[in-house]
Length: 455
Image: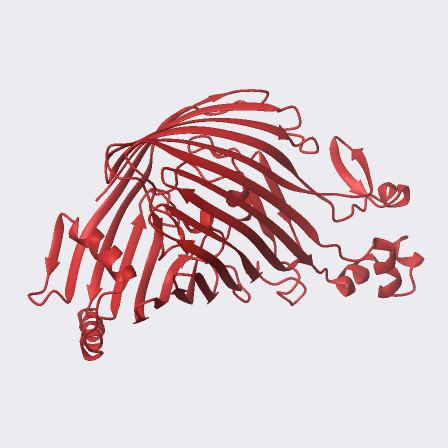
């Protein structure tokens, strides 16, 4: 391992000298705050070890379903940050409280003053809220929309260019890191985020959008193929850190691909900011019609159709599923000066020490895409194209994952630049009528608190 580290350090030195980019300066600032730190005599190489801890408490008020309240250590991270010469830096971040404990693990090459190439495991460039660090995000939990429809982290390669008047990042990614992989081809995706912007000391604004196309992971082989058994689960626990109940959940099978797109607008004037985001997910599906038809041969239903095309026509073909969500959030610094905008990440920076921040968020998320008629068999609900389909218990491809309207109000006090106390109240108005477990839940209230610390 040592020889590989030495090779990377040597490569950084060979590329020569140039002024630090803004991205390198931000990383160097974090390195300088490290308790365990090493810096070479010429300042070109630096290394530090850091950590992050989040202690959460949550009181959840029940409606129909019993919910968990209590306290937990939700985050316990160790990280390594390093600058490797004039052009390279890297980050390794692991979380011992997450079963997929590797978070950020990447190396960057700064090609010029305003751009870098990044390789490793990191957040795909999609949606500001999706890529914003939890420590910097003004609420304790991400919105139900981003929980359900965000992209999260994946193994990939991307290039970012941050100009004073525009910002763009695009990349290609493989599957998300996991501890267990199924047989068959791994998934892959391409993502991009593009913004136009204007920045100044007092006023900042950007507008743009994101796209993501993904071929999901195979779930093994069925009938000798791994093409028709891919599935995707879209779910949200409604912003709770203690209670993980998936009040919104859409389990979509026979997924061929997913296409997500979103729009975002962010602006601030001095100590006030406003942000809005919209995300839409389009799920393409494809079933193995030959295998399905062959499975019905020899049965009464099989005699009704002369071939696969007739059988497919009767069943209704493959229908895409569509889900969407929108968030609007705002904040004001009651104490602590003005907000600052990060030109590198294209989002608001965390407030400075001794800042008191009042924030609010409205979110709407829908994981419903159903059609046809609804019938109940043996206590289980299902959607059908016709009475004949219902009589054979042949449901269509409707998805009823539920929808929610959420309002969150929060108060954050930054004791130091790296120690924050948060308090959030969240009201969720849930409508998940076709889920037998949650159909009677309507009004869900939560009170959450967090002490977050990093160095």
